[in-house]
Image (cartoon, rainbow, N blue to C red; front, top):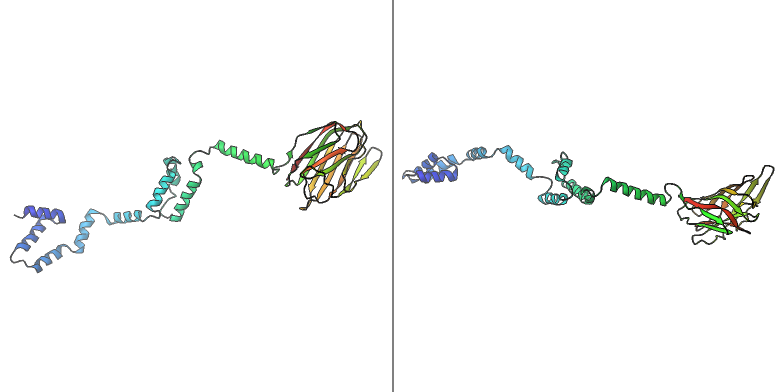
Length: 310
């Protein structure tokens, strides 16, 4: 008579039908008091019985694994943020391969957060927008800027034709320059005069408040003559040019001190004479260029140009 009821209780409690029937019989029997019912239930519902019933459903090791998996270092919000960050930035297979073996449970929350920051910072590169050709272009741009700043060697200016004038200004020396060179090739003049050089400031005006200290020596096959520089005015690069000759050479100036003192070295020749100029230019607050000039006549041939470097 109790079979249908016993079956329902058994399904709800996990007890067998026989166990339920026994409990019902004891409960409804006039001889079964509360103490006997309690004793019967206590015999069936003790901890070991419950453990046995649960053990049959879920292995304890499996439960521990689930707990460990839930107790990760990264929160659900952090994982969601990672998914959002990575989405659209890199192929999931590529990202998975890159992270395999790295994102184990030993990672801390701070490390995961740091990884997210790296992904965000480099999202352009991760998304495939920075190709090898883009990298090469950026390197070329950086090298070009470095070259223009004189960091990798000489910044070479264009050659200027020396004809029909008695003064040529070579400008464009930056404040960061530490070495300057003037190149002269095939220079000739209409008169036998001295070739002089003067320093210019950043505005192109002649620096006339500082002194030149030096000497120029001219050697020929038979004799040697010399000319002292005039102090404040200019340095003599090649005294007594011969109008019919063609002179070539260089003038090099190097920064000596942070206050603006420069060394001067000049070397010129015209086939029969060699001219050496050595000296010092006193401190200059600004140095922006060099002027080449002759006191009379004009240049009637040749070229010159300015170079500089840091």
